[in-house]
Image (tube, rainbow, N blue to C red; front, side):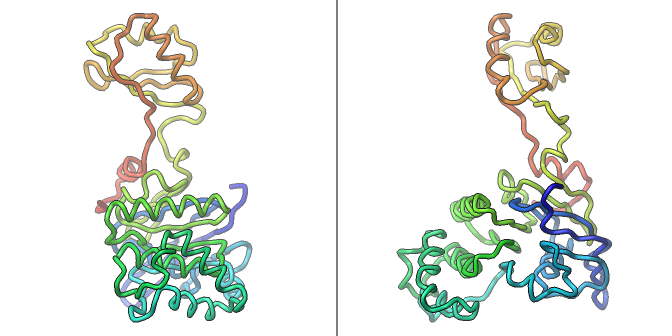
Length: 313
Protein backbone atom coordinates (compact mmCIF):
# COMPACT_ATOMS: atom_id res chain seq x y z
CA UNK A 1 0.00 0.00 0.00
CA UNK A 2 1.42 3.31 -1.11
CA UNK A 3 0.02 5.71 1.48
CA UNK A 4 -0.86 3.78 4.62
CA UNK A 5 -2.52 5.96 7.27
CA UNK A 6 -3.63 3.19 9.67
CA UNK A 7 -1.53 0.11 10.40
CA UNK A 8 -2.65 -2.54 12.88
CA UNK A 9 -0.37 -5.50 13.68
CA UNK A 10 -1.15 -8.50 15.89
CA UNK A 11 -3.73 -6.61 17.94
CA UNK A 12 -5.07 -8.54 20.93
CA UNK A 13 -7.77 -7.20 23.24
CA UNK A 14 -8.70 -9.35 26.22
CA UNK A 15 -11.65 -8.81 28.50
CA UNK A 16 -12.38 -10.83 31.63
CA UNK A 17 -14.17 -13.70 29.92
CA UNK A 18 -13.47 -13.21 26.22
CA UNK A 19 -10.80 -12.20 23.73
CA UNK A 20 -12.47 -9.60 21.51
CA UNK A 21 -9.56 -9.21 19.06
CA UNK A 22 -7.24 -12.09 18.22
CA UNK A 23 -3.96 -11.17 16.50
CA UNK A 24 -5.75 -8.65 14.31
CA UNK A 25 -3.69 -7.18 11.45
CA UNK A 26 -4.76 -4.88 8.61
CA UNK A 27 -3.90 -1.58 6.90
CA UNK A 28 -5.92 1.33 5.53
CA UNK A 29 -4.76 3.79 2.88
CA UNK A 30 -5.43 7.52 3.10
CA UNK A 31 -8.68 8.56 1.41
CA UNK A 32 -10.26 5.11 1.51
CA UNK A 33 -13.64 4.00 2.80
CA UNK A 34 -12.74 0.80 4.63
CA UNK A 35 -15.68 -1.41 5.57
CA UNK A 36 -15.29 -3.46 8.73
CA UNK A 37 -17.69 -6.33 8.10
CA UNK A 38 -18.83 -9.13 10.36
CA UNK A 39 -21.67 -10.44 12.53
CA UNK A 40 -22.55 -8.92 15.89
CA UNK A 41 -19.87 -9.93 18.37
CA UNK A 42 -17.13 -10.22 15.74
CA UNK A 43 -14.99 -7.56 17.44
CA UNK A 44 -15.75 -4.61 15.15
CA UNK A 45 -16.72 -2.15 17.90
CA UNK A 46 -13.73 -3.11 20.04
CA UNK A 47 -11.43 -2.54 17.06
CA UNK A 48 -12.90 0.91 16.45
CA UNK A 49 -12.65 1.81 20.14
CA UNK A 50 -8.96 0.88 20.08
CA UNK A 51 -8.40 3.11 17.04
CA UNK A 52 -10.30 5.90 18.80
CA UNK A 53 -7.94 5.54 21.83
CA UNK A 54 -10.91 4.59 24.03
CA UNK A 55 -9.86 0.97 24.59
CA UNK A 56 -6.36 -0.04 25.61
CA UNK A 57 -5.02 -3.08 23.73
CA UNK A 58 -3.70 -6.09 25.62
CA UNK A 59 -0.86 -6.34 23.10
CA UNK A 60 0.01 -5.55 19.52
CA UNK A 61 0.93 -2.45 17.56
CA UNK A 62 -1.32 0.31 16.22
CA UNK A 63 -0.02 3.25 14.23
CA UNK A 64 -2.20 6.08 12.94
CA UNK A 65 -0.49 8.53 10.59
CA UNK A 66 2.86 7.29 11.96
CA UNK A 67 1.79 8.04 15.55
CA UNK A 68 2.11 5.05 17.87
CA UNK A 69 -1.15 4.50 19.74
CA UNK A 70 0.52 3.66 23.03
CA UNK A 71 2.79 6.70 23.23
CA UNK A 72 0.99 9.33 21.11
CA UNK A 73 -2.71 8.94 21.96
CA UNK A 74 -3.11 12.71 22.45
CA UNK A 75 -1.85 13.48 18.94
CA UNK A 76 -4.07 10.76 17.46
CA UNK A 77 -7.19 12.21 19.10
CA UNK A 78 -6.59 15.48 17.25
CA UNK A 79 -6.92 13.85 13.83
CA UNK A 80 -9.77 11.36 14.37
CA UNK A 81 -13.52 11.63 14.74
CA UNK A 82 -15.41 8.75 16.35
CA UNK A 83 -19.16 8.22 15.95
CA UNK A 84 -20.32 5.35 18.19
CA UNK A 85 -23.48 3.35 17.70
CA UNK A 86 -26.46 4.93 19.51
CA UNK A 87 -24.59 8.13 20.31
CA UNK A 88 -26.56 10.16 22.89
CA UNK A 89 -28.08 13.55 22.12
CA UNK A 90 -29.58 16.29 24.28
CA UNK A 91 -33.15 16.36 23.05
CA UNK A 92 -34.06 19.55 24.93
CA UNK A 93 -31.45 21.55 22.98
CA UNK A 94 -31.94 23.11 19.59
CA UNK A 95 -29.78 21.79 16.76
CA UNK A 96 -27.49 24.83 16.68
CA UNK A 97 -27.16 24.82 20.50
CA UNK A 98 -26.03 21.20 20.45
CA UNK A 99 -23.36 21.93 17.85
CA UNK A 100 -22.32 25.13 19.65
CA UNK A 101 -21.81 23.11 22.84
CA UNK A 102 -19.54 20.59 21.13
CA UNK A 103 -17.69 23.21 19.09
CA UNK A 104 -16.67 24.79 22.40
CA UNK A 105 -15.67 21.41 23.80
CA UNK A 106 -13.50 20.81 20.72
CA UNK A 107 -11.73 24.09 21.39
CA UNK A 108 -12.99 25.81 18.23
CA UNK A 109 -12.73 29.57 18.69
CA UNK A 110 -15.92 31.65 18.93
CA UNK A 111 -15.19 33.54 15.71
CA UNK A 112 -14.90 30.30 13.77
CA UNK A 113 -17.73 28.32 15.37
CA UNK A 114 -20.60 29.78 13.36
CA UNK A 115 -18.90 29.08 10.04
CA UNK A 116 -18.04 25.52 11.09
CA UNK A 117 -21.57 24.85 12.33
CA UNK A 118 -23.16 26.30 9.19
CA UNK A 119 -20.78 24.29 6.97
CA UNK A 120 -21.53 20.97 8.65
CA UNK A 121 -25.28 21.59 8.81
CA UNK A 122 -25.22 22.24 5.08
CA UNK A 123 -23.12 19.11 4.49
CA UNK A 124 -25.65 16.89 6.29
CA UNK A 125 -28.65 18.77 4.87
CA UNK A 126 -29.96 20.05 8.21
CA UNK A 127 -29.69 23.81 7.66
CA UNK A 128 -33.48 24.23 7.72
CA UNK A 129 -33.60 22.38 11.07
CA UNK A 130 -31.06 24.66 12.75
CA UNK A 131 -33.59 26.08 15.26
CA UNK A 132 -35.51 22.81 15.78
CA UNK A 133 -35.39 21.00 19.12
CA UNK A 134 -33.47 17.74 18.74
CA UNK A 135 -36.32 15.78 20.30
CA UNK A 136 -38.44 16.66 17.27
CA UNK A 137 -35.99 15.20 14.75
CA UNK A 138 -36.40 11.81 13.08
CA UNK A 139 -33.90 9.01 13.73
CA UNK A 140 -32.17 9.70 10.41
CA UNK A 141 -31.88 13.41 11.16
CA UNK A 142 -30.40 12.68 14.58
CA UNK A 143 -27.80 10.42 12.97
CA UNK A 144 -26.89 13.18 10.52
CA UNK A 145 -26.67 15.65 13.40
CA UNK A 146 -24.26 13.35 15.26
CA UNK A 147 -22.20 13.10 12.09
CA UNK A 148 -22.14 16.90 11.82
CA UNK A 149 -20.97 17.10 15.45
CA UNK A 150 -18.23 14.55 14.75
CA UNK A 151 -17.06 16.53 11.71
CA UNK A 152 -16.81 19.90 13.50
CA UNK A 153 -13.07 19.56 14.31
CA UNK A 154 -12.41 18.53 10.67
CA UNK A 155 -10.90 15.09 11.41
CA UNK A 156 -8.61 13.45 8.88
CA UNK A 157 -9.89 10.02 9.90
CA UNK A 158 -13.52 9.16 10.59
CA UNK A 159 -14.48 6.06 12.61
CA UNK A 160 -18.16 5.13 12.29
CA UNK A 161 -19.70 2.29 14.28
CA UNK A 162 -22.91 1.01 12.64
CA UNK A 163 -23.94 4.56 11.57
CA UNK A 164 -26.89 3.36 9.47
CA UNK A 165 -28.40 1.18 12.20
CA UNK A 166 -32.16 1.70 12.34
CA UNK A 167 -32.27 4.06 9.36
CA UNK A 168 -34.78 3.74 6.53
CA UNK A 169 -33.51 3.28 2.93
CA UNK A 170 -33.75 7.01 2.12
CA UNK A 171 -31.75 7.98 5.20
CA UNK A 172 -29.14 5.32 4.39
CA UNK A 173 -28.76 6.70 0.87
CA UNK A 174 -28.32 10.24 2.26
CA UNK A 175 -25.65 9.02 4.67
CA UNK A 176 -23.84 7.13 1.90
CA UNK A 177 -23.77 10.23 -0.32
CA UNK A 178 -22.32 12.33 2.51
CA UNK A 179 -19.54 9.79 3.15
CA UNK A 180 -18.63 9.57 -0.54
CA UNK A 181 -18.40 13.37 -0.66
CA UNK A 182 -16.09 13.38 2.37
CA UNK A 183 -13.57 11.10 0.66
CA UNK A 184 -13.29 13.60 -2.20
CA UNK A 185 -11.96 15.95 0.46
CA UNK A 186 -9.28 13.39 1.46
CA UNK A 187 -11.04 12.11 4.60
CA UNK A 188 -10.26 8.48 5.45
CA UNK A 189 -13.26 6.52 6.74
CA UNK A 190 -13.59 3.22 8.58
CA UNK A 191 -17.20 2.14 8.83
CA UNK A 192 -18.45 -0.99 10.59
CA UNK A 193 -21.62 -2.87 9.78
CA UNK A 194 -23.19 -6.31 10.01
CA UNK A 195 -25.52 -5.45 7.11
CA UNK A 196 -23.69 -5.99 3.82
CA UNK A 197 -26.13 -4.00 1.69
CA UNK A 198 -25.26 -0.86 3.67
CA UNK A 199 -21.68 -1.03 2.41
CA UNK A 200 -22.23 -2.20 -1.18
CA UNK A 201 -21.10 0.43 -3.65
CA UNK A 202 -19.63 2.54 -0.83
CA UNK A 203 -16.40 0.90 0.32
CA UNK A 204 -13.14 0.81 -1.60
CA UNK A 205 -11.71 -1.80 0.80
CA UNK A 206 -13.10 -4.22 3.36
CA UNK A 207 -11.95 -6.26 6.32
CA UNK A 208 -14.00 -9.36 7.15
CA UNK A 209 -14.07 -10.23 10.85
CA UNK A 210 -15.40 -13.27 12.66
CA UNK A 211 -14.97 -14.22 16.32
CA UNK A 212 -12.32 -11.56 16.84
CA UNK A 213 -10.20 -12.56 13.87
CA UNK A 214 -9.59 -10.81 10.55
CA UNK A 215 -10.40 -13.52 8.03
CA UNK A 216 -9.55 -11.47 4.95
CA UNK A 217 -8.93 -7.84 4.08
CA UNK A 218 -7.91 -5.68 1.11
CA UNK A 219 -9.22 -3.58 -1.75
CA UNK A 220 -12.41 -4.84 -3.39
CA UNK A 221 -10.69 -5.49 -6.71
CA UNK A 222 -7.89 -7.41 -4.97
CA UNK A 223 -10.39 -9.71 -3.27
CA UNK A 224 -12.34 -10.32 -6.46
CA UNK A 225 -11.96 -13.55 -8.43
CA UNK A 226 -11.78 -11.49 -11.64
CA UNK A 227 -8.09 -11.30 -12.63
CA UNK A 228 -6.34 -7.94 -12.60
CA UNK A 229 -6.47 -6.15 -15.96
CA UNK A 230 -9.58 -8.04 -17.03
CA UNK A 231 -13.34 -7.67 -16.79
CA UNK A 232 -16.22 -10.11 -16.60
CA UNK A 233 -19.17 -9.46 -18.89
CA UNK A 234 -22.53 -11.15 -18.44
CA UNK A 235 -24.61 -11.72 -21.57
CA UNK A 236 -27.99 -13.27 -22.21
CA UNK A 237 -28.96 -14.44 -25.66
CA UNK A 238 -32.48 -14.66 -27.03
CA UNK A 239 -31.93 -18.33 -27.88
CA UNK A 240 -29.38 -20.97 -26.79
CA UNK A 241 -26.08 -20.53 -28.69
CA UNK A 242 -24.01 -23.70 -28.70
CA UNK A 243 -20.97 -22.38 -30.56
CA UNK A 244 -20.60 -19.05 -28.76
CA UNK A 245 -17.14 -19.84 -27.41
CA UNK A 246 -15.85 -20.66 -30.88
CA UNK A 247 -17.27 -17.39 -32.18
CA UNK A 248 -15.81 -15.33 -29.33
CA UNK A 249 -12.34 -16.83 -29.81
CA UNK A 250 -12.16 -14.53 -32.85
CA UNK A 251 -12.77 -11.44 -30.67
CA UNK A 252 -9.65 -9.50 -29.69
CA UNK A 253 -9.24 -9.66 -25.91
CA UNK A 254 -11.31 -12.82 -25.30
CA UNK A 255 -9.92 -15.04 -22.51
CA UNK A 256 -12.63 -17.40 -21.33
CA UNK A 257 -16.35 -18.18 -21.29
CA UNK A 258 -18.50 -19.96 -18.72
CA UNK A 259 -22.04 -21.02 -19.56
CA UNK A 260 -24.39 -20.35 -16.64
CA UNK A 261 -27.65 -21.45 -18.27
CA UNK A 262 -28.77 -22.32 -21.79
CA UNK A 263 -28.81 -18.66 -22.82
CA UNK A 264 -26.73 -17.04 -20.06
CA UNK A 265 -22.93 -16.65 -20.14
CA UNK A 266 -20.05 -15.00 -18.30
CA UNK A 267 -17.15 -13.85 -20.49
CA UNK A 268 -13.69 -12.86 -19.29
CA UNK A 269 -12.09 -10.17 -21.45
CA UNK A 270 -8.74 -8.45 -21.27
CA UNK A 271 -9.16 -4.70 -20.76
CA UNK A 272 -11.78 -2.52 -19.07
CA UNK A 273 -15.40 -1.50 -19.58
CA UNK A 274 -14.48 0.48 -22.74
CA UNK A 275 -14.22 -2.82 -24.59
CA UNK A 276 -17.95 -3.59 -24.17
CA UNK A 277 -19.17 -1.48 -27.16
CA UNK A 278 -16.72 -3.37 -29.38
CA UNK A 279 -18.09 -6.65 -28.04
CA UNK A 280 -21.67 -5.57 -28.78
CA UNK A 281 -20.71 -4.64 -32.35
CA UNK A 282 -18.84 -7.92 -32.81
CA UNK A 283 -21.79 -10.03 -31.63
CA UNK A 284 -24.17 -8.15 -33.93
CA UNK A 285 -21.86 -8.74 -36.90
CA UNK A 286 -21.79 -12.46 -36.04
CA UNK A 287 -25.62 -12.56 -35.84
CA UNK A 288 -25.63 -13.53 -32.14
CA UNK A 289 -29.02 -12.35 -30.79
CA UNK A 290 -28.25 -10.71 -27.41
CA UNK A 291 -31.06 -9.60 -25.09
CA UNK A 292 -28.85 -8.29 -22.25
CA UNK A 293 -25.20 -7.40 -21.72
CA UNK A 294 -23.55 -5.88 -18.65
CA UNK A 295 -20.29 -5.83 -16.74
CA UNK A 296 -20.26 -8.09 -13.70
CA UNK A 297 -18.74 -6.52 -10.60
CA UNK A 298 -18.09 -8.56 -7.49
CA UNK A 299 -19.76 -6.97 -4.51
CA UNK A 300 -19.06 -7.17 -0.79
CA UNK A 301 -21.71 -9.84 -0.29
CA UNK A 302 -20.20 -12.30 -2.78
CA UNK A 303 -16.68 -11.73 -1.40
CA UNK A 304 -17.95 -12.18 2.16
CA UNK A 305 -19.62 -15.51 1.55
CA UNK A 306 -16.60 -16.86 -0.35
CA UNK A 307 -14.58 -16.54 2.87
CA UNK A 308 -16.91 -18.95 4.65
CA UNK A 309 -17.91 -16.33 7.23
CA UNK A 310 -21.46 -16.47 8.53
CA UNK A 311 -24.35 -14.63 10.13
CA UNK A 312 -24.60 -11.24 8.47
CA UNK A 313 -27.65 -9.95 6.67
